[in-house]
Image (cartoon, rainbow, N blue to C red; front, side):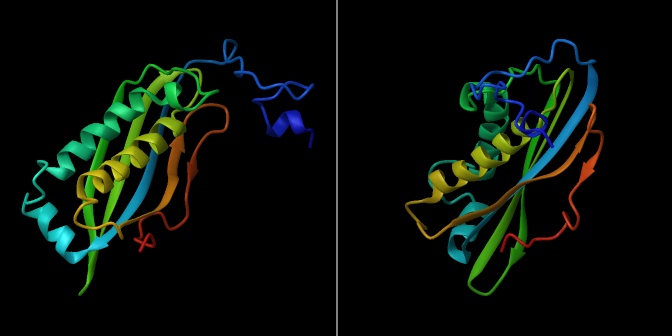
Length: 172
């Protein structure tokens, strides 16, 4: 396989460039990404009971994820600015253990455009998880963010992708 077939962000001379998508068809595209946050049970309890002191951690983090999706091309150097038609970020408790808790961040992004929204979904999930960490770090610096990953995408020339076993909480 030619390196150009794999690394589209480089010219044949090895120079970086933004891929030209002007000839690609506009299609409906969707991407879903997730991340997991493991924390102490005490931190989980403070989040659930709105006792963190900085406000509703989950709602603030969900909004931060939505805002991040909208700014992805400002953060990822060769990423196209994509008109987003829908962004949702949801943070749910995934597991509760004797001494720990795991939350899952799930971000879904949709557009009708010439390039996909995988990076927007991944950015949304990442920033939402980082926002939880930021809002709770005084209480729990041992929190861990894990398994930031694409779990689904559809649309465009490459079609549909679905991660095997994406429904589990193996981020623990």
